Amino acid sequence: MPWWQWLADVAGLCLLLLILYAAALLVRRRLLTRAGGTFEVSLRTRADRPGRGWVLGVGRYAGDQLQVFRLFSLRMRPLRALERHGLEVVGQREPEGMEVYSLYAGHRVVEFRAEGRPVCLAMAPEAVTGLLAWLEAAPPGRRPRAI
Image 1 (cartoon, rainbow, N blue to C red):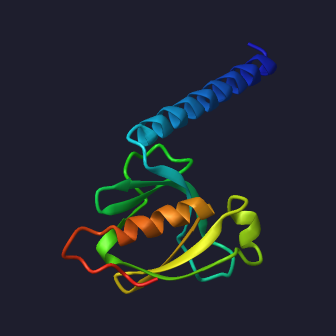
Image 2: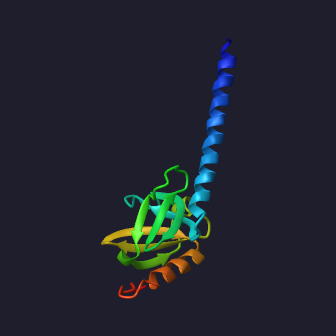
Image 3: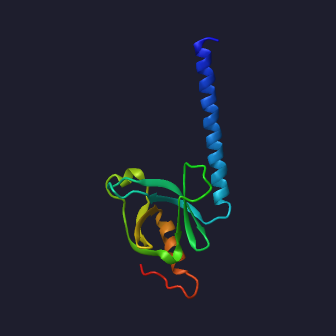
């Protein structure tokens, strides 16, 4: 078989794998959003360099947890699960510097303290309102965190 036929076979196989990956991502997104309560969110995984370390994802409320899933992953487990009773809102701000290019357009950065460690999430203003309402709607007996 000539080399160009091998090249065409490899290109076809790569295209097929790419289509299967895209289909798997769509099915995963559908399964995650099936129960409702999902929104676009970005999680900052590294804070060592300004404007870097943001991961695009999908957020979902599951009981007393806010679960953050990577957007381009096939894992059904969350990248990070934040407990409602351990979250304290530190502040909100507009994206700065390189963050503007790393995040979804129109999103705000919300800074938290989760069990003593800083956590940054970026989300749409409507999702910020929903998150703050979810935090304030803690079950009886749990102290809501100040904003």
